[in-house]
Image (cartoon, rainbow, N blue to C red; front, side):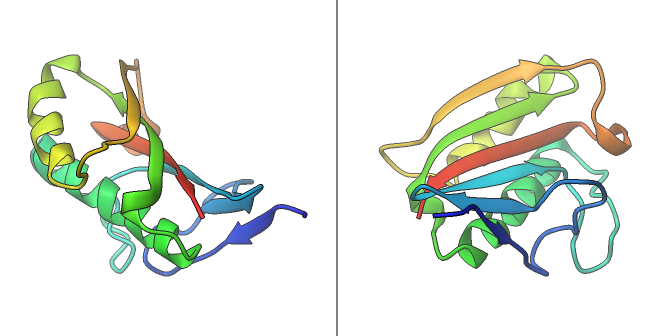
Length: 126
């Protein structure tokens, strides 16, 4: 089966040569989501809690457009501009998942698109 592109208005439009998500081999691969409101195009510039919430809301939009759900996410990668934001990010992140929570990596990076504080990508079962 060929990979299938996932498109939704419930996440920011792709602004480069990538897809919001791809369905392939029984999985959904969600591109990294920054804290951009897909309805307004505005960045969430508040606390890392609010930025995390917007990123995860965008992921939810892509995952659901692919016919999956947040409960089927098996792996996330969290990119933080500042690892000092980890505890605050983690508190909001925990609200979005129940046991068994997805596997996860969290890394500090030098810079993120649009100079946001966080970007999150996800992989889910279909």
